Amino acid sequence: MSLERQLADYGKHLRQAIADLEVSIEPGHAVRPVPKEEPVRQRWLWPAAAAAVAAVIVLAVVLWPGGGSESAPFVDDGSTVPGTTLTVPTTTALPTTTTAVLPGIEGFAVSVDDAGLGTGGLVAVSAGKVWAVGGVGQPGLIGRLEDGDWTHWRLVPSPSGQVNGLAVAPDGTVWAAANSGVFSFDGAEWTRRFDDPAGAVGVDGGGTVWIGGPLQDNRLWLARWDGESWVRVDPNPEAPPDRGATSMTVLADGDVWIVAPMGGWGGDLVMRYDGTTTESVACWEYLDPCPGVFTEIAAAPNGDLLVGGFANDIDRQYRVAQFDGDAWTIWPAHDWPSAESFGASDMAVGPDGVLWFAFEGGLASADGTEWTTQIEGPGVSAVDVAPDGTVLYADSDGVHTFSTP
Amino acid sequence: MIVGEVQGGSFAAFADGVTPRLKAALVAAVGVERAADAAGEALAYAWEHWESVRMMENPVGYLYRVGVSRGRRWRPLPAVFPSPPNGDMPWVEPGLPKALGGLSERQRVAVVLVHCLDWTQDEVAGLLGISRGSVQTHLERGLHHLRASLGVTL
Image (cartoon, rainbow over all chains, first blue to last red; front, side, top):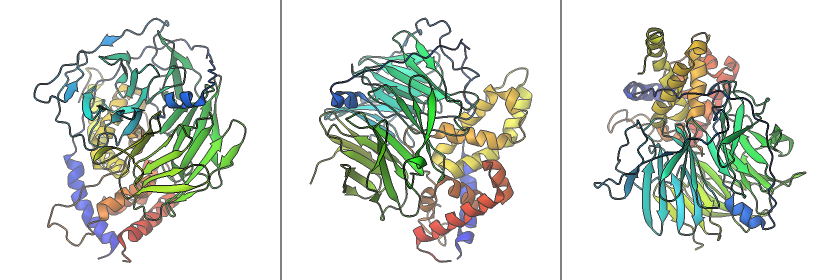
């Protein structure tokens, strides 16, 4: 039977699945327009680049077309964001699960299957402690794996509970960006820090927290936490509409880098905020050929930016380029001929400068001149490297520590 | 569904009208498991910005882009499609659902909407904001990759 006929027949099954989908609409969020703040740039000079890298977390910024209001929803007078302390009851029926209850929103306990936790992203604090974001089918789920034991939180109910980004500050505070706001965890309790949707949260080497999201006119907004309020910075006036973003990295020099994917094989954009303005850095000017999709960025130990991605969906070749602030250096490409699909992908850099890349084709490492396939097989979704160099990765079976055979 | 007192009637009718096609388009883009959340986000956005959305010529296309963008995660996640129940459709390649998830987003949207859900190429072009010729290209490439993935020639 022809492929077209099979697709048509499969469509009959798919129609029923679509009809069975239940869509719920959450109440909107209050938005308070504020005067535009003058951007303030800070530079952090780190004599120990490795320490800066250890504290820099790769995040995600989701650029929603038309999302948000005319101006970003910040505290209007720079006063302290009202911190809402969340009660965290422990459910007796599920001893390893805790539920954060937001005022006015009922929390609920869920039966949590550790498998798959982490496929939405990993942040390795140490060899024995890692934070994990839930993957497909686990919206709003955050887990902490410490010395072999899991603790889970589901900050808000679906659908608004989607966690878009997770970061750990040098002081150990965990920051989570979700469709329902931004939250911080001090080791004992979660506190709401921002009321409106945020696509990403990041922390630089100095501990400054950044968040990001979309404006109504499709431009990106960024803001940093000054300890009491969020200070908004200029959005990029040239950001094309309808672009999401999948990675944000704050380098040791204070520059914030963001990836805006095309959503197809058309060439992702990389954007940089230097403390004053945001510019689009078209990667095809520096990478030949340029990664077309699933572009990831990460900070190298020496403060350089690393950009990686796939050029096309035919030869499954992964390409990486390194930017030192002035010039780009192209790394040798890596082939994944056995990969069946692209699925999730993730990139992380260790304190030794070795890049680790995870995707549906497996797990590989690169030192700038040579690639080594470490795991060949489907389903490696996320990877991160702890400050001591321990590599942790996540697949559908859970979070694992990578060991050289 | 949350409906206000003044404008609720018109929004409810709008939502009832667009939801079926919006769900179909989002399933094609992000898979069944994520489509419900993406559609909820898109319709919530439409509710919050009803005054502007109600004036749009192509609200489904706009809300589709809202849903896809808001559905994007920290890390790209695969689009998951359901397999037919055991025994049903034995003539359909068992690997077809997974192969659909392995296509690029636009190829998958074009193939699923046109060949599985009977949308016209013009309708897909309007949804994606691209030319019909581009839709045809995505279809050809998508079918090519499916045949390669499934090892079929027909």
